Length: 173
Length: 177
Image (cartoon, helix red, strand yellow):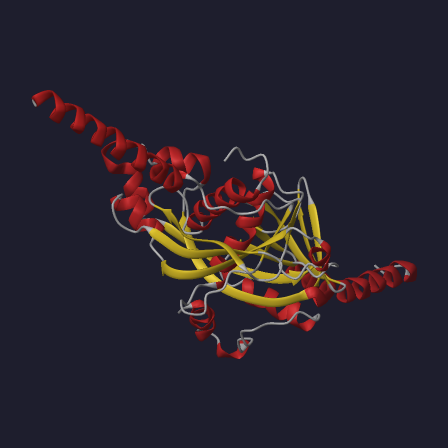
């Protein structure tokens, strides 16, 4: 009797594991998005949040720099570039600022724990037809060293990595 | 003692040339501003120090290694702002952060004010570019005026130079949320 209960328990355990494993596998799989040979970066939008223009430009320029530096895309097109129209597998990056806290470089240097500058940006990748293929919220911050604009560099690195991991054919994901 | 007439003539000529040349030299000095390129210009490193000149319908940035030219007619927006930086900055400034007894922190309290000039322009393919420069206080607004006078556009209205002491606060306000 005792043995049959143990066998039944073992079977139940095996069954549970076999049912649960594919579910884990599905969760671990990255979102299914098509690979792209080129990316177009649109100008950063900040309709809801009043963002100083130097932060807007710095976000945009650092984003393009980091995408070019990271490699993988044949072309990184800028907002309004006419040449992007002829690329069939183009992915377009729309970035919208959702939060901005301008800290103080002096406060960071003097106190270490205050004066952080932080920018929250919603990134939406669309295909050429405007259909959304990937959306993610990213954050850029500067906590100690560097000026306030360094937060834009931090965001750009994260966004370039996201684009590279999801849209570059040989990214290894 | 009498001066020979040819010496007097040459003296007059020199005075005349001097008087004619002085305003153009002054103009040139006003048009060339020492700036730091923060980000944006293709082929120019970040934080490169150079001179910014506005002449013949072009904005020209020149440093020891690179040169960048942007047609003022292609500039879609010019905005000025202000910022500040440590008096002791750069690599040495970073090293001072590790000074004992909070010496680095104390030095961080001493700061110099800066003007910023941000431009947005399009290249020949229609691609949008942006560039940011920092410079000494009071230099950005005259540069913006020169750019607008030579065909650049701006989303923020030009400040009235006759307002004197209010000019700086107005320029600061231009960027405040």
